[in-house]
Every structure is written in C-alpha cells, then in structure tokens.
Image 1 (cartoon, helix red, strand yellow):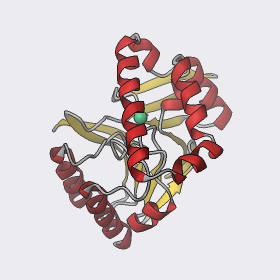
Image 2: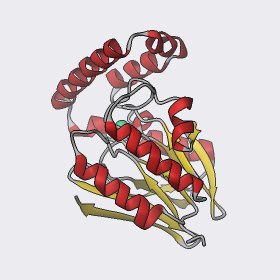
Image 3: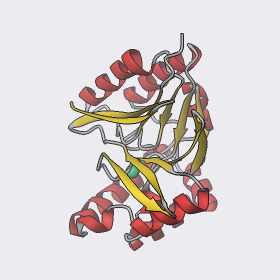
Image 4: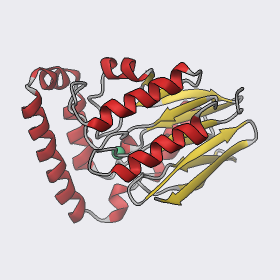
Amino acid sequence: MKTGRTYFVADLHLTDERPAATGRFFRFLQEEAAGSDGLYILGDLFEAWVGDDDDEQVAHDTARRLKALADAGTPVYFMHGNRDFMLARHYAARSGMTLLADPARIDLYGMPTLLMHGDTLCTDDVAYQSFRRRVRNPLTLALLRRLPFALRRRLARQARAGSESAKAAKPAAIMDVNGDEVVRVLRGQQVSRLIHGHTHRPMQHVHALDGHDCERWVLPDWYARWGYVVCDAAGCALRVEDL
Ligand code: MN
C-alpha cells in the first residue's frame, strides 16, 4: 500500500564514526520511507567515497537497507554530492538505487520539480567551482578510479582538510547559493519548485520570478540534526529534528 508521499534527503554524511546518524537514517527508512512513492537522496549520502570498493561497515549496511526498501517497491534515487561523486554503478546496483544526473527535472504529482545537490548554485565560491570542474572532469575521474584504494583515500583526506581550512577563511555568504543563479536555473528549466541540499541551511524560500512565486526547499544535514522534505499532491513540507 503506497502512502502517496515522496521523500527527499541529502547531506547525511554517513560514516562509521557517527553511528547515531546512521541509526537514525535506518529508522527513517523503516518508519517513513517504507511504503512511500519514492526516496530521493540528493548527494552527500556518505562523508567520503573514493570508490565502490569502499570498505566501511556503513557502506555495506546502507546498501543492504536501501536494497530492501527498493525490493519492497519504493524506488530509490541517488544524485551525487561533492563528497560522494565517485559513487558509481556498481554500488548503485548493490543498493537498488537509480543514479540521477544533477540537475534532474521530475514530475512530482503533476508539478515539474527540479532536483539538485546544490553545490553548483554556490557560484560566489569561485575557487570551489574551479576545483569542482577539475575533479568532475571525466578524464580526471577515469584516472582517479585507476589509483589504488589507499592512495585514493589519502588524496580524499587531503582534499577534505584543504576544503575545511578554506571554508574557515571564507565569509558565510560565499558558501550559500547565489540568488541570481537560482533564478537563472529556475527560469532555464521552467520549473517553479526546486529541492536541493549542500548548504546545510534547511529552509523554505520563495523567489518571485516573472510574476509568479517559486519554491526553493533546502534540505537539512544530518550532523547534529536530521530531517527531510516530504511532498504529496497537496505540496511539500520540511521536517528538521535534533539527532
Ligand atoms: Mn555537499
């Protein structure tokens, strides 16, 4: 029996080092996502991902839980985030997840809705955008995939440490989405609803565009809190709770 609802999550940053978030996610799968019309994971499901040969316990457990959900009839979709952009077909198949491009435009109960991870909207962060273009280049990705697992993990740790110290030095506004870019994307994709994560600033925004209002839903991260956006034929709602 379907519930007539669709769930959206992002930025869970799952890792063996934070079992509380993992436990909450598995409970969410059981209590909310099960039986729903679909679960969309919009990037950064994992804290880090250097290849489908990832050996963390959480990677195995998550694959098993997601596969069970998909096998029970709830489609599970995954879009890459900036932490887990190397997640590939092999792990997606193990988890029963369908890979989505970023952006993805879906029909959500009759309303065209755009899904993104959200990092491409942060155009004020010029240094990050140039880093992103370099590492997401298919040639770079193909080279990275050929490196031994231990080396890939070391490179990812270095990149993360570099990004943490760069973030500490950046004004907060630079790491948020750029309003002009949001409007440009909404207009270009001809949608009046956008759901994304990445900024860890859960909120419902309204953007006035060409004489009508557009909704932008920002998903919460799962560090000290957890939550999702849930939509049905009547509309969407954001839920955020303490972990
Ligand atoms: Mn992100």
